[in-house]
Each structure stands twice: as structure tokens, then as C-alpha cells.
Amino acid sequence: MDVRDLTRPDPGGAPALGKSRSSVLATLRGAGVPLTVEDVAERVGLHRNTTRFHLDGLVEAELADRQVEEREQPGRPRVLYAARSDGGRAGRRSYRLLAEILTGYMAGETPEPAEAALRAGRAWGRYLAERPPPFRPVDGPAAIRQLVRMLDDIGFAPEAVVAGRERQVLLRHCPFREVAMGNREVICSLHLGLMQGLLAEIDAPLDAEALDPFVEPSLCVTHLASRERAESAAST
Image 1 (cartoon, rainbow, N blue to C red):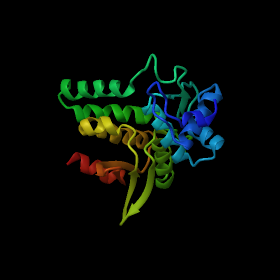
Image 2: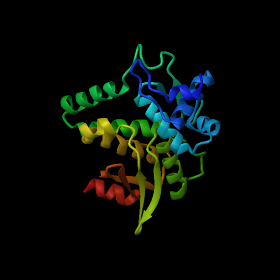
Image 3: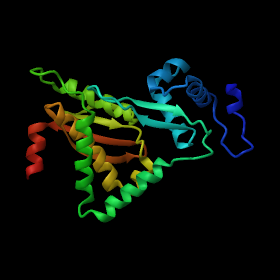
């Protein structure tokens, strides 16, 4: 298919796509197998964050699917993208609807939904962690790098910074923004737990102490602290 065809209005009702997003979609359709963000970025010549933005837009438009790689060997599974064979018109699966159903159920049917979401996030954070070799402890910078990689793979567009004397991770894109806006208690607790679980699994000297959601329309701030300080604060 000519990329130019994707930039023209579709009489069947599908939205027209811009040139870059059309190139991303054409790359997915021509690949024949699911691709990572890095795969697509290399083929279309875009920055990986820009590529992820377009891929997530295609998922939201139901023109592509996002899935986590199934693997048996150790290591964090990759996030893969594939074009929908039906063009987004037939047999649609709404993951956003599923997320809203599960979030609503947790919020309404569990006595402490934020704590339940935190526990679930911690469990998945441990699962996604890349455990270091025995007798090789992970220092703070290495732990932050792994945390940022995990968040980047999910789609948070993270950035590690130091504000004053505090280490922070800025989350500039929430891949679950629409659901989070309707129930921050569950979704944001889930995200905080995800970070805490990964850091705990690799026995990092740091912990994700708190998450400030939507301090700006497209910015959440994770506050990192030494594990001793975080555990002391949690026990008081």
C-alpha cells in the first residue's frame, strides 16, 4: 500500500493519518511479524519516543495491537506492536474498555482498592525486573537505569532527574491516561507499585516513595528515596 493512501480521508469513516504515522503503520503492515519500538524507529528513521507516540496513537485508533512478548527465558519481555489485519473495522478488542471494567471492579468491590492496586503493581514489577547476577549488588544509578528502561518500554516516556537533593523520575506520557483520569486511586497506585516491585526485586538501595499524578496535564512525578528512609516512612 502506498503511504500516501493512508493520509487521505477514508470514505468508510476511518480517520486520515499524518505522514509520519502513516509510515509507521505501513511499516507494521509490511513487516509480517510484530515489531518493537526500536525496530519501527530504525525502519522509519524517527526517534524512539516519537515512534512510540505514533504506535500508541495507532493502538488507540484500533489500527494496531500492543502486546507483551511471551518468553520462557529470564529477562524482561519486550513490548511488541502489530498492525491489525482487519484494518481496525471488524472484530475489535477494546483494551481500554477492559481496563475500565477491571479498574471499576477493583474500586467498587475491594475494601481498600488503592492498597490492592499497589500489591498488584508490586507483583508485576517483580516479574518485569531483570535480576542481577549473584553477589553483584545493584547501585542507585544502575537501579534507576533499569527502572527507566522498564517504564520506557511500557510507554511512560520517563526521564530521571535530580531536583535539589532528591532523585525523581518524570513520567511525561501516561499510557493509561484516560482510565487514570476516571480513577486515579487505582491506576496511580498500580503504577507506583510497579516501580516499587521492580526496585525491590533487584534489591536496589532506592525505593519509589511516592507518585504525584498529573502535576501538569502530561506530567507525573515519582519521588525516589533511600530504601531505609522509605521503609521508615512507611512504618510511621
